[in-house]
Structures are given as C-alpha cells and as structure tokens.
Length: 186
Image 1 (tube, rainbow, N blue to C red):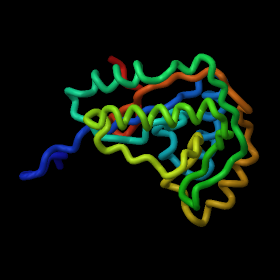
Image 2 (cartoon, one colour):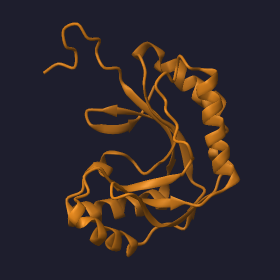
Image 3 (cartoon, one colour):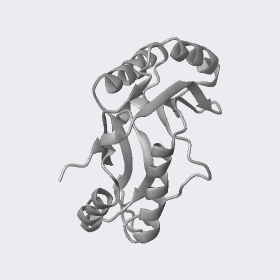
C-alpha cells in the first residue's frame, strides 16, 4: 500500500538532530544494545545509532532539506570541546531503557541552541515538539520491551559495561530511511 492515499498528501520524510558518540563509546553502547537484542529479542533500538537527541523528530519537504542542514551546521558550535559524562542505566516508565547523560551546562547549551534554531526557522522545523524538560540520554531499548521482561532487562543492562564519558562526538542530522535512522549525506 502506498503512503499516498487518494485525497491525502504523501507523508513527509522524518528527520532529527543529534550528538552521536564515536569511537569506543559508540562501540560499547552498540555492544550493549546488541547483547540486549540477542537476549530479549528487543530490536527497535538497533535501528538508530547511539545518540543524544538535540532536535526531536520532525517532518520536512525534500526541497527544504539542504537549507535545514545548512541552518543546523551554521547554528550549532561543533562539539569539539564538549565532554559528555554518562551515569547509570535508567528508564522512562516501562517503555524506554537508557544510559543517562549527566547534567552539564555545555550539553544544556545545545538544548537552548536547538530551541532558538527552531524558533528562528519554523518553516524548516514545522512539527518539532520539545519535551517540557531536557533529559539527555542514549536509548538502549524502547517500544518493543515486553512488560514481563522489563525488570530482568533492567538488571541485565545494568550489569553491562558502558563508557563513563566521551569527548568524541559528531553533530548530525538523521533521516528515517526504510525503517532505519541514517546520517544524512549530501
């Protein structure tokens, strides 16, 4: 069945902006996600690279994508001097298990900059909805967690090894492509 139904416009492509850990931090987080998937058949989190969301998902017309990416690259400071410190494993209800990012003024500055960017360019970020409070984190499992597995999964993920911090990050725009989130390459 086509995404376009008679009388309705086609669904627009989906994007978000994130900080992506690189190197060893990326490897350790991906390893935890893969171990969790093998043990609990939890696969949704594998569809996205390890990331800290800065601008939540939004839909945008194809012809505006280049302009949006330019606006993102021009608005944010490159994360060359940013160090992200990770806390323990935590959860949002029984729906999402994540590696916590410890509060820090430098990471909070990215949230403030994101809100400024969206306010300055509502035509490029028309459907962005920020949460009331910024809670930076890296998702380990979400949406396909069986309720009966939640406590065991939390214990399992708490027992794995994670990075304590990283200063090896990239700011990227990601796009949903055939069910997987990929970095937008222009």
